[in-house]
Amino acid sequence: MVAYAADDRVGAKVVHSDAAGHAVFDGLDVSGSTAYYALTLLPRNGAEDRVVSDPILPAADAGMRVMLSGDKDAAPPVDDLGKVVPQPALPGGQVLAAFVGAPDADATAELYDLVAGKVIATHKLERSRAIPSTVTATMGELATTDDAPPGALRVVVRHAAGGNPVPLRDIAVLVRQGVAAPAGADAAPVAERPTVGTGVSDAAGLAKLEGLPTGVPLELTVVLEGKPITKAFTLDAAHGGTIDVTADWQVLGMYQAIFDGVAPTPEGAYLVQTTMHEQLYRSNPFQLTAGHGAAIPVYVLPRIAMTFELDGHVDDAYMAFQGSIVVQNFGWAPYAGPTEGVRVPVPRGATGLVLADQDKEWVSADADAFRLTRPVPPWGGSFRCAFSLPIDGGDVTWDLQLPYGSYESSLGILDNPGMKLDLPATQRVDMVPSMDGSRMFHALRSITIQPKQRMVFTIHGLPVAPTWPRIGRYVAGITALVLLALGLVFALDRARRAAAADDDDKDRAERKRRKRRIEELLDEVAALDRAGAGGAAASGASKGGKPGKGKGKGKGGDGPPRSRQALVAELERLYREDAAQEPARDGA
Image (cartoon, rainbow, N blue to C red):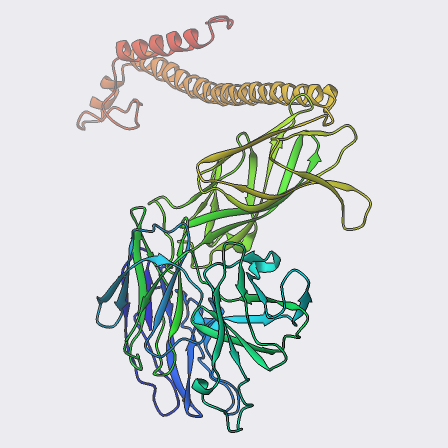
């Protein structure tokens, strides 16, 4: 199991499978910051299947099961490295590192042993050349020509170059008399088939041979990238002839580094790395078998790039856009970016940023951008989103900052009567029908822009929303505020009235209490006056007893009688309180 971390750390752990074919790796990083690759070599039918998993990013809530499988015994060996780049036939112990993108010609490639944790070989980069095992050639039939004298042969050598043949210079050609015997037959040694002509192609790919024998079997040999290609022919005595040779081969990358004599890795793995443009670039992890080398690409590209696929249409006073944004990661490790996460801008002035529910696990919507909350996995990821741009006076301006550039993006805008797009001269636009054919779209395709640039264009002639809905909204808003204010006033007044009513109840209760007390005091004063007039003390002494206890009501029940002066003072105080509470009351 090989680990590639977002902070450029790498490592490997070897585990032997058990009797059931299981190998368990635990303690893996579940934060999304580390990608894992499971590799193994499976012996089968005298060869080995070289199998490797896709990037593994363990989930936080569950483990994972990965199957590494070979094929049936009769099938050719499996080589999963071919999923990354077609694997040519390379000799055992050879690693061909191909540098793709924008490599630095003066850089050095390093072969890194993942189990040992160190660089084991280095090699300077060189221009890529044809891989010998991939060289093929097509030789046309001999065509007679009057431009060449009898005994002359013209050989034209070209490279197919994807359908646009180009001449090949400095290609060696030779002609031998006689032909090689078919396989299995007794063939004459090459020394017994004398060379009767040689030549080298010029800048036009033309090699001229003169004085060849006529009327006898001859064999043309063209040496391409060290590989001889042959064809039998015979010249007649009256004319010269021409043979066209079209060659093709596989070349990987602009520059390459070849490591030979690398040990096979039944219990290990390698990677190729280089430092260019002040950045570290690494290949995918790989293993070597005893009989096969490996062709390994190293992508010297911007670490991440953006591709958007959006459709837009008029929605009331807005141009609404929706679709998907792809964040591509050209590295084999997750890309974490800055501490706050990778920000994916939207056009300036956009509002209403929303995300599909399933994408909210790793993307959030800020006010002016989408933000990735987890590292970008190897090979990248995508999310679905929507946002709107306001229509201002019938125009919409798309002004999008592209910190990571745009790679093969597309934008479709639903047509409206009178609509016109003001685009940069370099941007092509086509009119394409909708799925049902009822509407037309302005289609902007293959939008590729370098990082740290902007994409700016304007859409004119869009419908302008009538003013009365806006005025109606303003009136409705003001009316709502007025009603809210009136409701608040009414609520406060009701509370004030309730408090006043409560105070009135308390006042009435207090007045009743005072009236009862005033009546009690008046009774006590009258009782004192009656007692003083009747001579109560003399009546008690005439019976020969002790002076009796006089009873008088005071405030609080039985007790010593209060003086008339104290009772009158309390009466005056109560009358004053009553007068202060109701100054207009009769008798106050």
